[in-house]
Amino acid sequence: MKITRARLIVCSPGRNLVTLKIETDEGLYGIGDATLNGRELAVVAYLEEHLLPTLIGRDPAAIEDIWHYAYRGAYWRRGPVTMSAIGAVDIALWDIKAKVAGLPLHQLLGGPSRQRVMVYGHATGRDIESCLDEVQRHVELGYRAVRVQCGIPGMATTYGVAKKTGERYEPADAELPAEHVWDTARYLDHAPKLFAAARQRFGNELHLLHDVHHRLTPIEAARLGKEVEEFHPFWLEDCVPAEEQDAFALIRQHTTAPLAVGEVFNSIHDCKALIENHWIDYIRATLTHAGGITHVRRIADFAALHHVRTGFHGATDLSPVCMGAAIHFDTWVPNFGIQEYMPHEAVVDEVFPHDYRFEDGHFIAGQTPGHGVDIDEELAARFPYRRASLPVNRLLDGTLWHW
Ligand SMILES: O=C(O)C(=O)C[C@H](O)[C@H](O)CO
Ligand SMILES: [Mg+2]
Image (cartoon, rainbow, N blue to C red; front, side):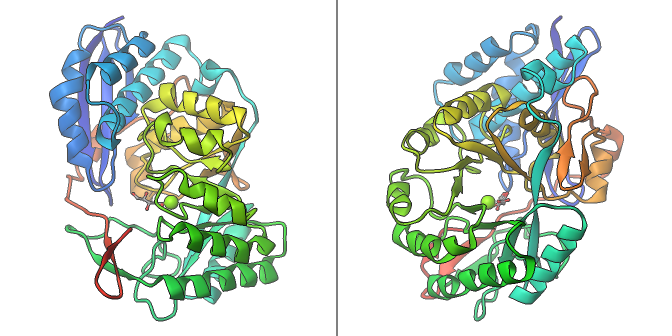
């Protein structure tokens, strides 16, 4: 079998999504997700100019060789653009391999470690009460785990809170970056109250998660951890920017709140120290952004040696293609923790027909050969790309801060 064509489909059914289709001389094709939120066309250029032309004529079964050709052969290693491009190729090649084998992807990875994978949903509200009403709605839908984010009194905007209660939170909401304002003192005062209220209303069984979205310093994160640990969060996510992996050592000394990190990571080197020093509990690097199944499998196996479990990023900027592949990965990976699930708009699900399904707070992988996700190209063509940017964040005095 040979690769005859590799091309990108860029569409925007409510949000931008970049899809790679690799076609072969035997009529089989594979699909990969190449979406890097707010930087979509950078990955398109990387693939079209540098990677896709090198695939033509190759045997799609040689996934390992193609991965190393793309990684080592680039000379300029790593980084989100490069690794998302490699990730898209890798996911599409695994899709082809599983289709050739006539197996759902998880069977090719080693078979199921579980029948279904627990997901967490997002509850957001402008204040604690409305956020908890959203938690209630999720509980009624069957969720066992819910991420809680609410507005902070005195702050016009805060990460993770939808514009209207019950709506989806979409961060890439403006053509050029919107400017948000951040006040750590107000946040640290308010966040523990949200956890306290959630435990009071829902008891101890429901898993509660929270995303700090890189906003704190290590000692501030340590304080937050100490204050919420009595409410036993499932995890605190991205407490500090993770360029400096050692920062987690300080947080860890102070709190038993489980820590999750890694949605912006793109290689094992971004999390090596975090994992081997037991500074984190969950690794969130995604298949799309961290070099595909081939590389994330190495991260997951390494993490398993150190009691770290997976908790993949699953925001709407990961397309159903990434989600489908992730659900197979989650079904296989022995050290699975949880899967994030932000439902896509109905139109996105129409553009990407798929066989995974949500049931009773869990995802169930489909049995179609491959990762089980396709693209309706005619429908996709009706939604052309539109530039959309993630926001930036400033402190009260105007200093540019982490978003
Ligand atoms: O889902 C999460 O945990 C996020 O932090 C969402 C990110 O802000 C979003 O995916 C950025 O593209
Ligand atoms: Mg996050």
